[in-house]
Image 1 (cartoon, protein in one colour):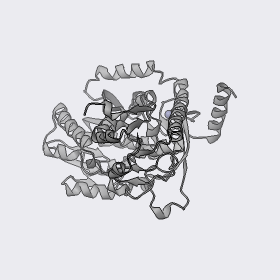
Image 2 (cartoon, protein in one colour):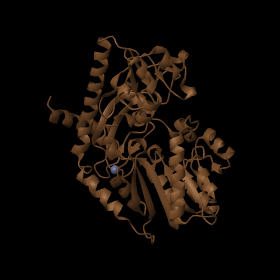
Image 3 (spheres, protein in one colour):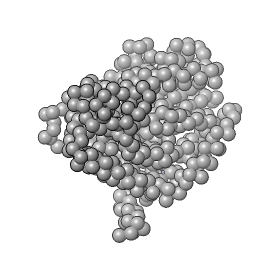
Image 4 (cartoon, helix red, strand yellow):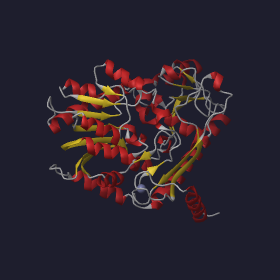
Length: 431
Ligand SMILES: [Zn+2]
């Protein structure tokens, strides 16, 4: 079967699926990449669950030819994912520092003070709002996971346990709450009903208020082959083109955009009401133009991504197979959600990786979903002295290689799987 025939067969398959775009409602007919079946990436197993059945869902990513939203069909309800969430933002020191710098800059840019009101959607444990509070700005966090919201309240950050959308926005406005600033960091991907979420923002925002949203940039995801950042908890992946479409549809206007290095390359967009007096900066038109030049309005660009993911899988497996043939030992570093997409898509189990390690004690003694690789404390690497260490959270590779530099003592090497397989010898790097 030639490539054209494969693509025709794929399009026919898509037509049978009969799925509509979660933003514009068009029938979805194109696939970005099909990563096969995978269990939810945060469902780490305990030893007594290893011989039980696991739930697997498709990781078939679709793209809309009208609004360019890259998306997964929803299989798990947000209530199951987010009611008791294991991720506390404050555990990441670099993320807290990133948020503090943002708060100082935005308070200055918008002239926020005691007279203002800022709302963060999916405010987690108050990692960000604490910095606005320190600047004297009244705040409110909205957070669906009760356990992380409790941690925020204990820090003195007022937080409501709820899902955000039109219902809650109307309720807040009725209570006299109107926001000068609405913040949404890494929440957009996890919103099942985008239109309800953005319509809620429109209702809650003051006439001259500003919204800032941060999310991984799908242009970077595609350019750097970050297929492992796709998982079931992330329903949507955005270009600026899609954000522009979404804003216009809801009477909002893009007024600025910045590119950030976080999460492998993110965007921070600034939105205001369509009729707001705020000027639109040149950054918006420049980035929209660049995305068009990079082919993000062409379905063929999206279709080619699937082949890049397959290439990365073959290269990684070829490396692991040849290392095992030479009798080498290999372990993993990290047990992030994205690691599980990579391990399941490539079918890398304990036949390749003896174990992996993680800094989060919650994961110690557990096993990765699907591939059942044991997760141990960091010290396990010291004891096992493996020949190769496969870094799963590749976005943190510089930090990890620096922290684990001592593995050079037994000539261990690091392997980074994305964007392509790279072997790094720590003895050749400066300490
Ligand atoms: Zn669409």
